[in-house]
Amino acid sequence: MDRYKAAAEGARSKGDDRKARMHQRIVKQYQDAIKSHKAGRPVNLADLPVPPGCPPLQGSESSQQNFMGVLETAMKLANQDADAEDEDGPGKLAKPAVGAPVQKGKAPTPPTPGSGGNTTQGSRLGLKAQQQLDFLLLRRQAFVRAALRSKQMKDMQGAAVHLRHAKGLDQMISATKGGLPVDITKVPSAPVSEEDYSLARTRSSPRSSEQYSSLMELLRQQHQVITTLMTTLTAYL
Image (cartoon, rainbow, N blue to C red; front, side, top):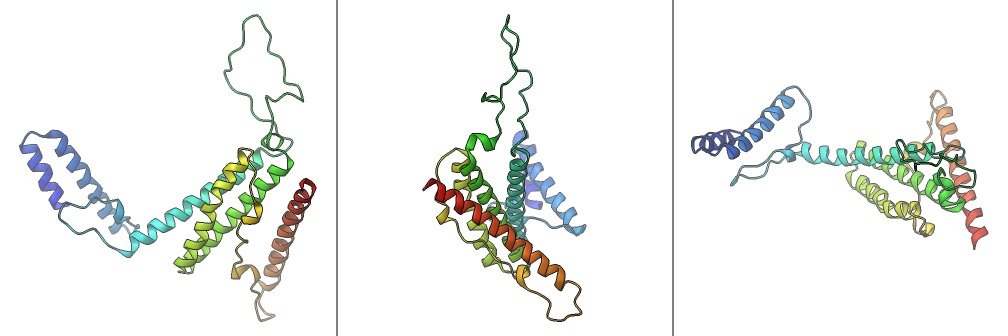
């Protein structure tokens, strides 16, 4: 920070106000980082510029913070996609465009049930494609959650593998949304967390029944998705 302060003062003395402001902004970044560190908040050292000739800032917190940020961002995107699919589910009409121009001399005609103006994503894609999209979104969410669990258990290698699988499904999801065929057989198997099937060994544990019920519900949902998907695929083969 002191080097950037000196650089800002030197640029100001030479009349280079633009460079002085640039260095001053970097000084402000360091000051904010110091305040956050003193307040006990995590600091991402990778965001701080390094003065020329100085070694890069190193610290375990930066790598962990960056990795956690990637996982949280991936989880947020996966949840947003799933929420969007729920909102566009069957039976819900798309919102009409606001402020759409109307031709003069013609009254706006209401949409008919067979018109393609206000159609849901499910009707646009078709039943088979919609089921594939739901399956891919659920599978990506499962990988992102598995990556978060691995990160919490300090298993960075496992978290990276799960995150790589989740990112690998992005292209298939985009292709399905675009109406292109995808090969479901190439989708990686769903990750299984130890928490999903581990039951308490003692009868005194109050969570054993709850864990067992959660496991059975998870298996039932997966079986229903697979059965529906296989039935659809068989009908189109």
